[in-house]
Length: 474
Image (cartoon, rainbow, N blue to C red; front, side, top):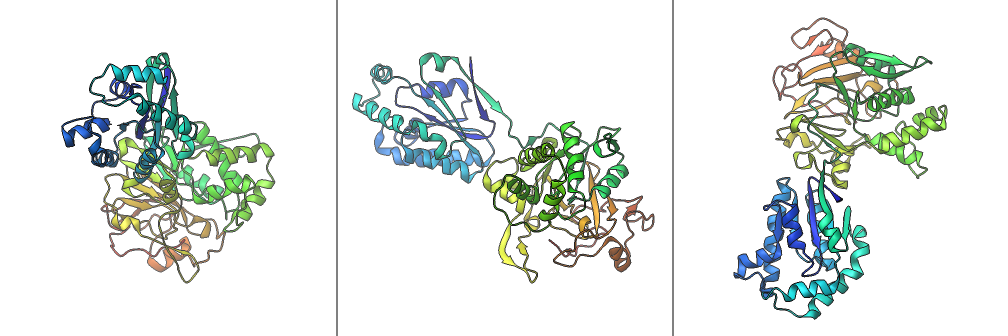
């Protein structure tokens, strides 16, 4: 028995000459509505599945149906010869347009067998030369399918291999829908290890330390798990300490983590690639120079392996570093990863030379709650069932977490300004003094705060019910 793994959400292209058994294979291994046959589409148009005169129209129908299925998040199998590069290119483009992974299943059976099978099918009114031409096209392109963009290529080269094959549907790496929490989603840490330890303590976690007294794990008595929104590193005083703690928690299955743009840049720097050493990366690299080569290797492996975003709790919760529009939830592509890491920029810069971010949350109408960071903001403000948890700890603000599903925010103030921002950012104490908001350690103003925790009065309003959009900082 040969297992052929395919992503649960993907576009599967059957590839093979006429008579190779593509339709039979698709019918035996996929659902009746998952398979779209070019022959069937010809029949829809011309009442004849073999009418080659309507091939162009038939593929217009096929591509339209496939597009609608992929948009709905359903696995789609295209049953056609697909031996021509141009035909496959259109399928790869279709998969890319819907941010799903293209897969090729190639039936590379002997030409004589395919000719014999066609001879037993009187409705197939074409000669041996057609199969020979298709076979030649397949031979010249088979080895280049991965370069064409197919993420998985399965080749079956005999009747026995075809008979022994089974399809195994794999969950996407971002699919954590079976994880129901409860969770504590933690905003951008940026090397502020001490504040992270304080926040975890306030959330009820017990820290585990190694023989050197360094925090290497944290466990909650009620089996809650933190989910880190990324940007663990840079700018702060102890990025290695933050990494050591978070890596230990993730390894022990006590936490989850998505990458931030700062981890993405750190991975490239540790790999020796040319990057601009700025925005705090210089501090992180200097701090890591004091660690062992083994630890630096573990950091590179950990950060490289982080998945762009997580879909949790039956799709009710999505965590991504810079947020994620609904169409990208549970999808896999370079475009999705880029948005999750960097957000959507208008291409403009502000007076401080920083990129102007498109306010994607203003247009969000999705069912899932989206929790993210990336853009420091002094206020925790719900916008259309989304919330930015980066409250600028490294700039002297606060380190914040959101309890899920309780929707209760917990914050601790920064111990000091660790890094001067390009754009001025109010410290936690300045916010309390200027706006009358208490710091996280205060017990006053219980309308919004209680014991360092905050509950929003209604979804869609700001912390104290105001609807005025907050100022945003990078």
